[in-house]
Length: 365
Image (cartoon, rainbow, N blue to C red; front, side, top):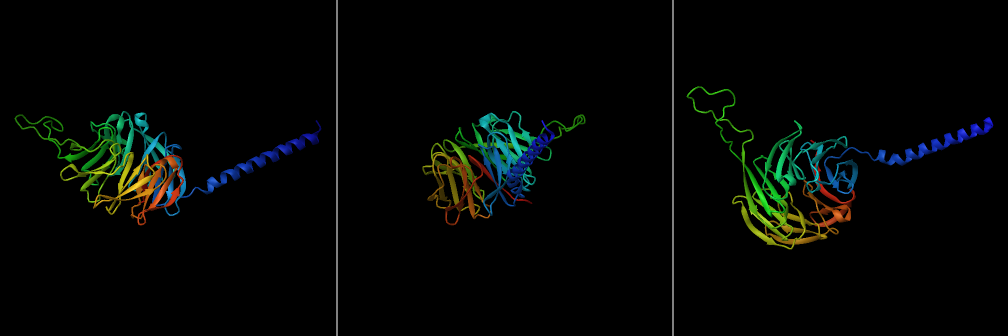
C-alpha cells in the first residue's frame, strides 16, 4: 500500500469520526437545551409505565424535566419546602421503597428502604415528615428526612390500607382500607403513665414515678363505609370525610363529630379511584378507572351537577391551590387532562409519559 493511499484512508476515517461526533451533538442538543430549572409552583406527575416523575410548568403545561423513580410508582408527594419529592414503589406488596427526588437538581437521591413495611402506597407530607401506608403490612408509618429513619409505625388491622390523610396539628390520621370497606380514624390521646422510672431506682418507700411514653398513644375507630373504599378527601373545615366506594358505586359521608356515616349517596360510581374536594369546599370530583368521565358533586346539596368527559378512564386527581384548575391522570389515554373549575371543561392535555397516575403539587419555599 502506498503512503498516499494510506494517508487518504486515515483522513477519510477521521472525517467519518468527526461527522459522527457532530451528529451526536445534534442529537443530544435538544435534551441539553430542554433542561430548565424546576418552576415554582410545579405539577408533579408519575408515569407508571416509564417509571419516571415529570416536573411540569403549570403556566405552559410543558414538562421541563423527568427523573427515574423505580418500579411501579403509584403516588407522589412533595416536601413542604417544595425541594424534595417522595414516590411510593407499590407492586401490591412486592416492593418496599420510597423513591426520593431532588426537585432542584432534578435527579434521584438514595431511596428509603422500608424493610418489612411492604406495599407502600398512599403518601402525605405533614410536620416535616413523610407519612405512608404499607398495604402488605396492614400498617401506616412516618419517615423523618432529618434523621433518615422510619420513626413511627402503627398497625391498622385492616385489609389494603391504601390512602392516608394527616391533619396539620398531627392529632388525627385517616386511612381508607379497600378490601375491608372501612375508614380508620386514628386519634392521638394523652400519654399513658408508666410505673417504670426513666433511670435509676426510686427511693425506698417512694411511689413509682410516672414516665410519658414517647409519642403518646393512639386510638383507632374503624368506620364501615362501602365495598372498595379507596379515594377520599376531607372537607376544608374538617367536619366531613367523603369516601368513594368503587365496588358499590357509592359515596359515604362521615360526620367527624359523631365518627359515623351520616349519609350514603347512590351515584353509580363503580370503579371510582380518587375523590378530591376543591379548596373552597364547594365541589367534590371523582375519577373512575373504568369510565371516561369525571363526576362533579355539589358538596352542600350532595347532588351530582356534571360529568366531564376526559378519555377512557382516570386515576389521580390534583387541585391547583388557587382553585382555578384540576388535573386528572387519564391512565389509559397516556395524558393528564386539565380541567377549568369555572367552566368545568377540559382546557388542555399534558404528555407526562405512559400510564400517568399519582399527581402532586410542589411550591418552593
